[in-house]
Image 1 (tube, one colour):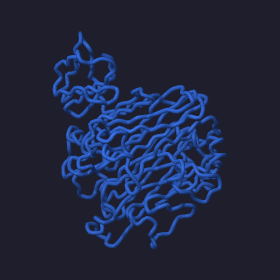
Image 2: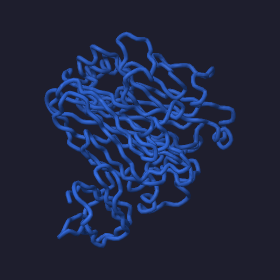
Image 3: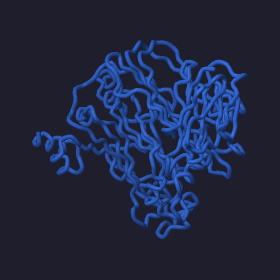
Image 4: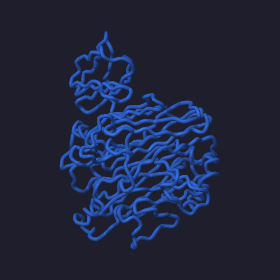
Length: 457
């Protein structure tokens, strides 16, 4: 086996060869190695940049390269995606993401906006001063379900699979604030690798349907309540996406990525909101974005900024305003659907409390459908919420009670259509006389934790 690993490393250009040989269950496959991103508004205008072999620059913020047969053949059933971002001359928090593109066989390049693509990982950069350590931030995703797609013989026979690395940044503040950044346009350096176990056999029977992928800020609007293309109804933060499943599948899931943006005063970055997800009219997931604390990522925020400040903050302080942490990944939310029939389907995302003050900001949405004609995925529904234990919501004799020893900040009741029908600020019983049918009850505790429960009245 060690001889095989040495050969594999030589063929694929694997990094950390010694550790790969010693640990046969952890094999890294390097795809990007310190690729330099530039001022996103310059598009392709980079006279000072040389491209690495095999890398295509679609813009200063979007690179792509095809995955080789050797790389795809090396994938095992276990798969992690690791990303490393090194500080150059952008000292602000920016959004980055990793995508797969399904490109016509043999094509030397492609137009991203005209190509089927799925987002497989999203992250936020920290506020970084390139002259201070640490100047590299790591991100990691466990994406075992992607391995089945990437090893699918039918998919590989139809398409070349390209891996995109996207990171939009601008150097203007750093040009003035960071020593050594005057007149420079490089913003970040990115490295990306897969880490897998021993190679697994090819698969068949994967059904992939890209539904929507987030738009960068220079192309168009994502989900909001003030642009026609970004909402079903002006004034409401709700958007429906229709997709067609070509054949029946034994098991299915939707992979969903959202993050809330708007850094203006009162913007959506600073307000945690209930998110409701419906598939074919049925509520399948509720969640409120945000970590319990951003303190674990403080060490990467080496540039003074208005998010971290000078002193450590409590969990409750973080939960009072942060939708995501600079220096952290954005969750991939998995919605398990079970067996699923061919035909046209609809997924709707609603964030009824979102305000978008001053008509600024949006919620970039990416999602895709993944089905298996045989077998099943590893996990069921991943209800990604700020939920907590020790809280229950019960209906007793026509009154709704919150059973908890913790202090309750608010109780909200929503229809399945995500319309708010009741809100109160303590845990006194709620009269249910005016309610009937299915509703979602959302309880927020004073420490920022939230529990959501679907109930029939």
